[in-house]
Amino acid sequence: MRRTTARSGPKASAVDAAYEECRSLVRRTRPTEHALMDLMPPSVRPACWAMYAAFAHADDLLDFSDETPQERGNQLREWRAALEADLASGTSDDPIRLALTDAVRRWGLDLGDLLGALDAVQQDDGREGVATWQEWRERAHAQNVSWPEQLMRILARCGMPVPVRLRDLPGFTRFVEGLFLTDMLRDLPEDLDGGHVWLPTEVLERFDVTPADLIARRWTPAVRELITHLAGEARAWLDAARRALRSTLPLGPAIVLDTTVDLFGAELDAIVRAGGDALSRPVRVPRHKQWRILGPSRARAAVVWRLTLPPETVAADKPSAVDIPEDTPEWQPVPVADPPLPPRPHRDGVRPPEIAAALLPHHVAIVMDGNGRWATALGLPRDEGHRAGAVALRDVVQGALEIGLQHLTVYAFSTENWKRSPDEVAKLFAIMRAELLDGELLQHDVRLRWVGSPDGLPEDVVEVLRRQEHATRHRTGLTLNVCVNYGGRAELARAGASLARASLAGEIDPGRVSEQLFASHLPHHAMPDVDLMWRTSGELRVSNFLPWHAHYAELYFTDEPWPEVDRRGLWEAIEAYTHRKRRKGASTAPVVQARHDEL
Ligand code: IPE
Ligand code: IPE
Ligand code: MG
Figure 1 (tube, rainbow, N blue to C red):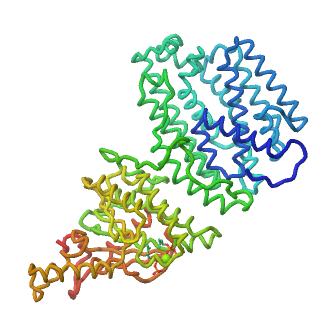
Figure 2 (cartoon, rainbow, N blue to C red; figure 1 turned 90 degrees about the vertical axis):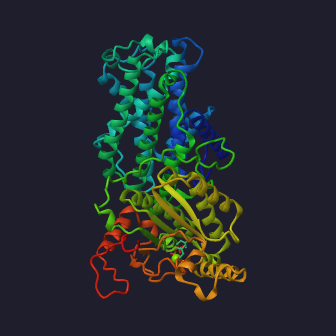
Figure 3 (cartoon, rainbow, N blue to C red; figure 1 turned 135 degrees about the vertical axis):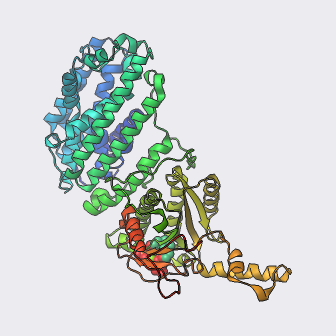
């Protein structure tokens, strides 16, 4: 852990160990929250673990120890009193209290507010349950508003213009309620083990369910309806809160908000899907789903913090691997969804332009250029650009599916790109491999094809390309050709060699080599001609990309670097294409007839 200030008081190593203990407690008992905390800037994370661990510990003292309810209440009261003494003295012999004491001092947290929230947890001691939604809401706010506000305070101390009094923002209390209800549904098995039902009596009565039904884990139709209703409520609250809050937050916190809503939404799905099991065992979101949500957010958040916060705040003390499954031994490919999922909507809800299928280009090719310059201009290493570029591609593919494109070919690594530093090349392949293994794109109706040569490629990249090609071979939606280690001239030379061999074997007559015959010897002879070739980042050249297939492509150049592109860029390119007049050598022609004049 990075320490920047010299301090008196407890030894730095003891404080570090205390934070680490908080981290492992949160990770063990609240893996989702732990993963969300990893979206925060690295220097802020220890304070998150400390605050959260304190609340989790207080909660667990009331819920789980073997003592009588009265003794449990006393334990929490003693712990709370000890915390206050520790905060005054600046040190502690208890790791959670030591970490929290350090966080409070380091970041100037509002002690009164934090202790007030702990007192609200304490009030659960001896409480029988909650009668009305109103009471439930008050409990939710009292226990849960304080610590996200303290988090904002920390970001503000880092120099970020964030609203500190979150409770004044429209939508924030709804957000807290959505989280609290999800958490409650998730913790049902444990609460029921302890004989607690924290859902409002008024909702139980409405669905004709008694606390005894729940405690006895009776999965009656009424209980099922109740759980489904509550999951729907939690989801609706979270969605509404996201809509209200998003525009009030800077980009970094907005990413955390979005990811939280998505992850909690996935948990709600999992709870509903688990049926009666949700009453008796903790429900987990499958890891690949978590990773699909967290992976892109991690990349985005890392970039955004670097852009918006001082370097010492974001300097990572660990490599930025996505930290979800503690025990995942190696990257595992995510199985492709069957049937494929519909395209993921754009985060702002934008929809594709309506273009008649006959006017759409059949095949779009993209030179995804400008990753490196984008990153460099922002003071980031080049690989951050490639990482952000992968995120851009994900969105563009969703847009291709939405608009109904048949073929999309993207230039991911050229045979000329070997001239780059070994470090950049290695990172590029690592990013590519992770993208392919994660398989977000492959959950949709995408058939992946690899275009290029295996010569010189790392074996694991070749393996994953081949594996994912195979796994998606039956898909009929979008064919996504990924050009990795691709060179246009090399492709032509290979076709020439193949023709020469066929000629030597007496299979063809060299005097009759037609365009069609030549094309049939290309490594990817089934690939249709490119209608539209788009290059980003202001470069006006084709860089050895698809010389055969793009012979009559409409060229389209835009200035923005690839990481700034999303699906709207693809739609604009396609719209521009529909206004082109494709004459193909003739003297006049009607407006573009993309598909038909190819057939
Ligand atoms: C395109 O971005 C991605 C690859 C070539 C792999 P660049 O890395 O070429 O970015 P610039 O052109 O240097 O900005
Ligand atoms: C083309 O971009 C290759 C890819 C996008 C993979 P480059 O950045 O390598 O092209 P040049 O060198 O600028 O022409
Ligand atoms: Mg380039």
